[in-house]
Each structure stands twice: as C-alpha cells, then as structure tokens.
Amino acid sequence: MKLINLIGPIADIDRIAMRYVIDNNVHLEDTFKVFAKAEGLNQYTEANPYGSLMKLVSEVADMAGIDPAGVGRGEHDMPPDEVCVYCTKMRDVIGGMISQRNALTAEIENNLNVITHLEHIASVDMPLQDIFNFHHIKIRFGRLPLESYKKLNEYISAYAAFFFKFGEDKDTVYGLYCAPVSMRDKVDALFSSLYFERMWISDKVTGLPKDAIKQLNDENIRLLKALKALNIEYNTVVAQEERQLLTAYRSAYYLHEAFDVRKFAAHTAESFYIAGWVPESCVLNLAQQLDAEPNVTLLLEEPDIVGHIQPPTKLKNNWFVRPFEGFVNMYGLPSYNEFDPTMLFALTYSLMFGMMYGDVGHGAALALCGVMLGKKGNFLGPILKVCGIVAACFGVLYGSVFGFELEYGFMYKPMKAENMMLTLGAAVAMGALIITLSMVFNMANGVRQKNAGKVLFDANGLAGFVFYWAVIIGVLSAVMGSSVMKLWYVVIFVAVPLLLVFFKHPLSMLIQRSPDWMPKNKGEFILENFFELFELILSYITNTISFIRVGAFALIHAGMMMVVYSLADVGQHSLEGLTPAKVLVLVIGNAVVIGLEGLLVAIQVLRLEFYEMFSRFFDGEGKLFTPRTVNSKQS
Image 1 (cartoon, helix red, strand yellow):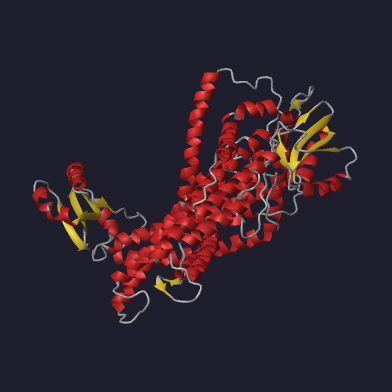
Image 2 (cartoon, rainbow, N blue to C red; image 1 turned 135 degrees about the horizontal axis):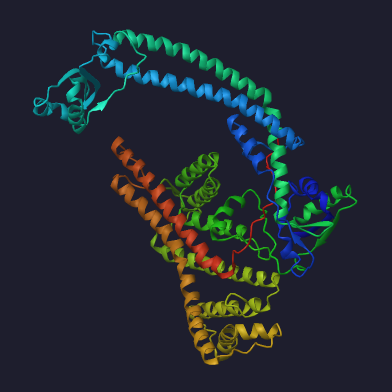
C-alpha cells in the first residue's frame, strides 16, 4: 500500500473526487488523522445536496425493476437538474402504470374472493339484491366451524333467528342466518361467540348467485386482458428508457459519492486535501491519469512514514486458498504488517480434515455437495469441495470406499491393532509441526513489525521455540534409551529460554532503550509472570496433545463404518448376501456418517486452527481495504 495525498484548488474537489478517487482503488483515510499536527485545515461541514436526488433516482430504479447492485459502470455525465427533470417525469409515467396495474390486480383479487363466497351459496334461488334489501330482517352470509354448528341449536332457540345451511367441508359449515332488525345486535353477538366468519359480498353483485358468478368471471377475463396490455406497455417503456435510466442513476450516484468524499477531506481557503491508501500496483496508473491535471499535486508516502495510521488490508490469494478466507475472517482480518495466514490455514485445515475423514466415497459425496453449494454462491461450497477431494485421497491410502475395505499394496489401515498407536503418534507429530510453524510465523510477524521482543523473548518467539523443541528432543531421546537431558542441556536449552520468556517485558523495553524498562512493582511482576510461565508450560503440553484428536477421529470414522456394516449384517471385505433391506441400512448408515461426522470433523479442525495455531501468531486486527466505488461490476 501507498498513502496518497491529493492537493488541488478547492473549487475542483468534486470533479477530482469523481474522476480520480471513485472507482480508482482509493481507500479514503481521514485527512485530519494523516495531518494530525497540521494547522489551518478545516473540515467540510455541508450536508450532501444530492441526497434527495439519490432518493428520487433510487425510487425510479425500483419502479423500473433495476437492481442497483447490478448497475455497473458506464455513462454518468447527465447534469443533476436534467436528472431531476427526467426522473420526475419517469416516476409519473412508470408510477402511473404501476398504480393502474395494482388497481387492476386488486379488482381481480376482489372478484375472485367474491366468487369464492358466492360458490358456497350458488344454490340460493333468489336475487341477491332482494335478499340484501329486506327492511325488517337482516341477513348475514358466512361460515361456522363444524363444532360450533353442532352446538348451534342449544343457543339459537332463545332468539328469533334462523340459520340455513348451504354446504360444508371437513371442518366448516357454510350458510346464512337471518334475524329481525330489532334483534340484530344480540344475534350478531351470539354468532360471533360461536366463531362465525362473515363473508362480505360486494354491493355490485346482483341477480342470482350463479348468474353473479358468471358476470364476475366475465369481468375478470376483461380485466386480465387489460392487465396484460398494461404489462406489455410497462415492459416496452422500461426497455426503451433503460439506458437513460441507468445513466441518470449513475450520474446521481457519482455526484452523491463524490460529494461524500468531503467527509474524509480537509481544506484551507484555497486548496482541498484528500488522503487515502492505494495498492502499489495502481499508483503508476493514477499518477499517469493525474498528469492531465496541472493544478493537482500527488504526494506518495510509505506506510512506515505514517506509523500512527494503520494501512488497510487487501488479501491476495489464488483460487485454491481464496475460499478459506471466510474462515480466517471469522477469527479476524490480518493487519497490514502481519503475514496472511490463509495459505497455512488452507493447507493444514484440508490436510487434517482429510486425515480424519478418509474415505473415497464419503469424500466424493462431500465434494459433490461442495460443488452444489458453490453454484448457489455459498462460501462453504469450495471449502467442502477441497476437503472432500483430500478426504478421498486419504481414502485411497486407507483403502476405504463407503466403508468397504479394499486390499492392495500401499494401503494403511488405521484400525489395525499395530497401526492405532502409530496413527495417534503421527497426529501428535503433525501437531508439533503445526505449532512450530505457528512460532515461525510469529517470529516473521515480529520481524515485519520491527518488534525485537516478539522475535526473541515471546513464548512463541525464539526463546519459546528453543524450549519447545529442547523438551521434545529430550523426551524422544529418553524414549529411545539415550537421554540428552544432561545438566548443561537443561540449563542452556530449557532454563535460559524460560527465563527469557519470564523477563520478556523488561528485556523488550530495554532493547527499545526505554527508561522505564524496570518493573515498578517487582513482587507483583514476579508473581504474575510465574503463573503465566506455569500456564505456558502446560499449554505447550496440552496444545500438542490436543492434536491427538486428528488420529482419534480417523479411528472413530473407521469404527463408525464397522458399526454400519455390522447393523447391515454384511462384511466389510465381501458384499455377498446383499438384500434390499441390507442395502437400505448401508445407504442410511453412510448418509448419517457423511453428515454427522462431516460436521463434527469440520468443527474440530476449526477449533485446532483457531486455538492451537492462530492464538500463537495471529492478532487479526486489520481493517478491510474498502475503495470508494460506485459498483465493481463492469457494464
């Protein structure tokens, strides 16, 4: 990254921002943070005048069915007053058609509801207007729950009311009740307590119910034709105006975003100041573009020069590693002065997953699921695909296909008695290697951050590295019968590194030539660091042993498939005597193992990555590189 400073005439800020900042890979930085000690700089305090214009064009774009996320780049030179006039006109035109469409749709739906109600009383042989125009009797059409209808006679006898049933279905009875006008309120209250649902029939419906149904169906045919014609007109107008609409949208968007750059900028009476981060690969192109602006000055600074500001992070990974960025970002984004751990994560995650989940069939099934999820845009899809392929490769080594055991030369069976301890030991050895790599990454980060204390005295620095491997070598030599744990060895490679870790803080301050390198409260310092050192020694042991779960899950996977084949009463080396029932057991058993163990293994490996590896070297406190852009999609 390079920190750029753009300085130019104050009147040109919007034009410069639109032409050279927007869509030019510039991550804006607060200018007042960059020039922390500068005097005479003023903030821009004006409200964005293009907010209402942006609201108008967004409204019209929504009416026209244009997704702002897919607008892309293109022409954006329409003047703001012309954008306003054009979009106001299109809002009236398109909005009018949408209002007509909504009205037609509502009328059609209302007619369908009335038809549904009328179908329940189609057997009534009396014009509806005669029924509704009774002066002394009030009639209510509707429906009752079947249970309420069964109890109706117990209540209605006390009222001068009648209920006429027209039809029923599984749970509902349809009909009408009538009552004198003087008793209307009491009868309405009675039927309401019995959960009577009234069916409102439009006043425009006349004649016999069956005739009214035909009239409404005929009217809906006419309305549907009108709606179809209106939709054709709407699509024609949108198609004809699409290019102009997109130009208006982009023009307003660029104006709004360019003015918004002022939030990060500063100015004097004559000049504006814009600061931001640009990838080194884009600096030359930006400088060449600015050659056309003789009144604009471009200043470049290295990140080290402005150490009080953290540069943003822009990850660069290949197709294999890139999908794993989602998992890494769950922990945190690498800082600019940290190494990106995604490559290490991708390799170790897929390797441990494959070792724990080794089966050709299961791996292939998981890879297939990954392909399907990837097509739907799920970031887990590519990860599952890679892990499934690696698991299938380990399945070839284990000689396992959907739990069926094959026999050939280079095959390795984790569940064999003579291989179990070897499998667990290999998992622990791999854990020691991963922890060592984590220490190396931590030291490399220390070098990059120019932090000598982190490199030399950290628990995951050189001192911790020497101690960790001194203990490993000592234990291995004792197991092999020729222990190297002599006094000189213990003092040089065990005691001294631990003392360096113990005194990390004062030694680091001393290297930095800080006058306050000596702890003020020495007793508190010794007590606190003693317990931290004790915890550190335990963490080396527990973190290394924690990787035994990699080998354990390899054994568990094989054991679960043995159970599946036992339940199916089929041998893992011969499929003789298969029946449809046994095949069903095998299919269900494999499906359960694929899903359940796949989830467990994914979680366990993620835990190892986060707690045993990332916690040793990865701070994850970076800020994402977010260039000011209208849209990254090219039109």
